[in-house]
Each structure stands twice: as structure tokens, then as C-alpha cells.
Length: 231
Length: 231
Image (cartoon, rainbow over all chains, first blue to last red):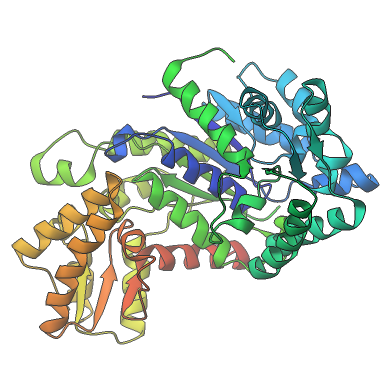
């Protein structure tokens, strides 16, 4: 059997499904049996990541570790975690396991740097922005990036929460207004640095100007599955 | 935490994702944490079910049992298997576990009988048709059903395999031709009795005339998760 991709999921549940769909789309299979085996543990009751970062609510780490243990025992051979904000705890999770644990921020920034992308805006939760997950790496590589101002960031967070509450249309209207403002000040590319954002924008024909962090993570996992690379 | 739904999946991988999406759609949640926890083990290399039934290829049972053991160990509290043909082995799988194991054929036929549906055609793999999974139950309850003739059934199977090979448009054209023929001989309702069929027809606006077996299975699992029913 091909090597098994484990998904530390549920943050949110739709983003877990989006990652699984992207695994299928990125796999050149002509029948069921050629697809990559996946174990997805989607536990949506993992405490809210942004809430913990901003106001010290319950830490999600213990529940994320519990899911990681389940994935290990079930036989996962590589872990992906389709939630950008959760990567604030990536180092601790990675240190606790012997299984390769890909990093969505690293993989996405590698693409940005290798393609020489500039004037890129970071669309993410307020938790991800506050922890500077993307900024630190982009700064290091001299990538010229834009972070939404506080009002814009508030609207983006409202959009993400609207999507999670089931109101996709409201979510789109909100984020679209900020994207338009950012384009008007010279932003050329957008990092979809929250796994809900590709879902909010899908169906509205998003194009090459968007860098889909989920898709980059999945492409790396699929490549791992085929190439047996050490990560 | 809410009770965990386990998915014995990968038959095919897209049908597993479809079931997960339908769990979200059928759950009245307003944030991540209100969603139902799901463990999906999607192992697409489970041998082809129809091939085994028709020509005695490798039995899928051992690999299905292995997935069931993983789901049990991971903590799943109820099992669903989004593949109609695989239900040929449902009794053996169910007998091997203490966890409630829902039956897609039973749940779907219960709906058909309770709603007094008649003149219903069974759209399914040739394996499902040959094993009479649906026919036996519908016969018992005096439901008037239609099974596609051999030529039509060949086209339906070709459609399902086209979808599994990644050609959704060809899959739709093929099955649509058979559906039109069946409507012309008085069929009023259609059982989408293969988990790939809702995927083939989605995006083409399928309506109330279709009974989606995956959706019925998922609704029962969600109800189980909320009601703590013994099944």
C-alpha cells in the first residue's frame, strides 16, 4: 500500500475536507486503488486557536496532541494539519512525534520565495497575524508583504467566523471588500493563510493572484507520498 | 466531546469526502466546536467490490476488516461505510464488531417504504444489482421497482468507472442517457445506490426525484450522534 497521509483535522471540519479533496485533485489516479490512503481525524472541539492566542482561552495543544497520538497509532506515516493558526503549536507537535510533520507556513513561504513573489498580502485569522507566523519568515527572505490594518483584519476575522457559522455568502461579501481595498493600495498577490479562505472564495472564481496555503501543503504531502522524501 | 462517527472509507475516496460534507450539512452548528467528530480511514486500495462479485477477483473483506479494526482502536463509536456495493459484506463486518454499524441499504429502503415511494429505479454498480441488495428488501415491502436492463446497466457501470478515473463530464453524459430512457418508461424516482452517483449528478441540479443513499446514511448517523440511540 502507498504511504498513509494523516490529517490532524477539524480546525475547521470543512477545511479538513478541502485538504482531502485537494489530495485527490493532486493525485494522478485512474481508479480508486491508485489514490493515496488517508486517515483524517477531524475533531472540531479542539479549542479555538485565535481565542487562545488573543485572550488566553483554553489551549488547544492537549487536544491536538491527543489527535496526533490517534494518528500515530492508526498508522499515519506523515502528518498534515490544515489550519494555519494551529501552526503556532507546530514546533511542539513536531517535537512530540517521530513521524514527518509538514508545516503549512514553511511550504507556502517556500513557494513565495522561490517564485520571487512580492507585494503580497497575508489574509489570515487575527491569531495567525498576531503570532507573526508568516511575517517572520517573509521578513527573513526579504519578501515585501502587507498586513491588513486593524479594521480590515477585524472584517477578515468576521468573514472567517461567518463561514464557520455556515453563512458563506456573508463571509464572501466581507472578505471581498478588504481584498478590493488591498488591491487599490498595490497588493498584487494574496496568501490565503487561513484554511477557510479558499472555501470562502471558491465558487467566485479565484485566480492566480491567490496563493492557497492548503493546496501547497497538500502538494508537498502528495509529493512525499510518491517520492519517499525525508522531510 | 460528542460521539465519534467512524467512516470505513476509500471506496472511492471522493465518496468518503462526500459523506463527510453531508455530515457537516446535516449538523446544525454555528462554530467549529459544535460539529460532530469524525474519524475517516480512507484506504482506496481495498480491492474492487464489483470485480470480486462478478468475476471472483481478490475479496475486499480482509482489508475492510483491517480498516474496521483501526476505527475501533482510534475510538469510533458508530461506523458508516459510504459504498453501497461493499454492503454485500455488511453482515460479516457488523458481526465482527461491538460498535453500531449502520447499513446504507436498510436506511435508504426504510425511507422509501415509509414515504410510500413507488416506480423507483435502482441506479447502482453491477455488483450491487447482481447481489440484489436493494431488490430483496424492496420486494419484501412490495415496492414497485425497476432494474436497468443489461445494456443500460453496462452504461451505468461505465459512468461510475469514468467518474472514478477522473472524467466527471463523460460520467454525467453516460448516466444521463439511461436516466432519460428510464423516465420514458414511467420511472418516477431514482435510488442513487452507488456513492459515486450523487457526485456524478451534482452540479447538474438533481432534484427530489433522486433518493441519495449517502445522504440517508449520514442523516441517520447524525441523528445517532445527537440522540444516543442504540442501533
